[in-house]
Image 1 (spheres, rainbow, N blue to C red):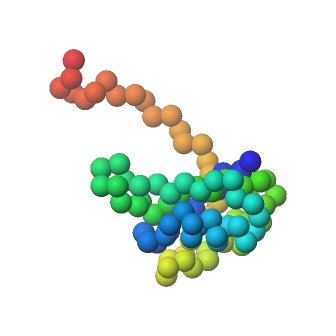
Image 2: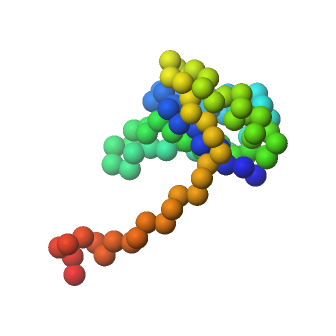
Image 3: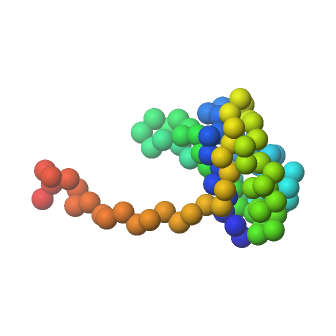
Length: 93
């Protein structure tokens, strides 16, 4: 399985919209759109999981493609670097 990062999504995009876009290039295992923790509003990016060969074809076909008037940024997702854990801030003991 390959995880694909999909950025610059229109805020109106749904998981079904993104799934339909990528299913044109192969079987989609999962779609996850990211929402802001505090407001619950879309953040404009998400992740799609597909098989390796299908994912590479989908990346090539969809990177730069317009969706809702915005040019998508599509590439293979990178592992997020570990952030140091906070002790709760300067006022917490």
